[in-house]
Length: 280
Image 1 (spheres, one colour):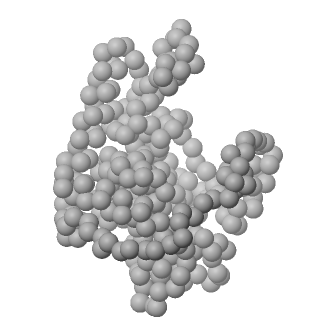
Image 2 (image 1 turned 135 degrees about the vertical axis):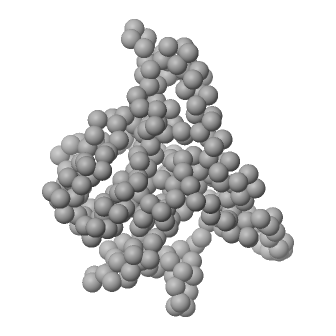
Image 3 (image 1 turned 90 degrees about the vertical axis):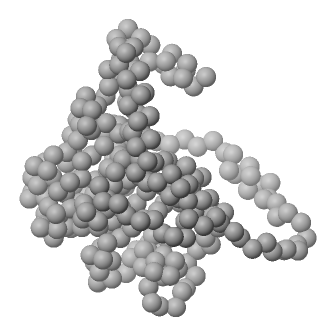
């Protein structure tokens, strides 16, 4: 894996200038707002209604290729899917938390580019726990979460776009239908283009500080050491399960996600009791 030098800013401790802000007191949330947040919610997954939701979501025409849970896609699977559906975007998850698989990404970016596709990768459950060299893998868009391996509070989603993806975004013939998810506006807000910065949203400053310090800790340990520690922990956990006679959801060790281990409950054991015991 190629070694990428971290930004020098992360080697310097975070120092925020202290300011005295005078105000009348704390800003309390109205009681009715708090009561509304505490209302019970019933979510119905009606298959017919879900089908309608799929049809209307942002005009996306989604085609799926599937593998059994616990298995990963091969390049041949993806090649066949691209040839059949001729998509403009290929979306794949690097660390699939439900199936506990770590999808190999080698060759997928090149395959997509040879077929004029943009490759988008979800790395929420894998960033920091598995190697992910975005440039070498020719990934166009990759996003993650602050709350997994990085160890920061939830709420932020780091995202990276390649020059190819940015050019694609800039050459849209129609406006982005969502103000909230308009990456051109978000990028401007974060100072990623040459235009004057425009207000888009109120940034979660405390969360940004927390993520910055989490990344600083990664730099202090060293990215390679940070990833190796997660992989070593996964190996120790899996070795322990094997010694107790457990089997794994992902049979091929090469494709197990280091950050989440899927274990099959032995025959004759009540799964609900196991879950309740773990919950205690």
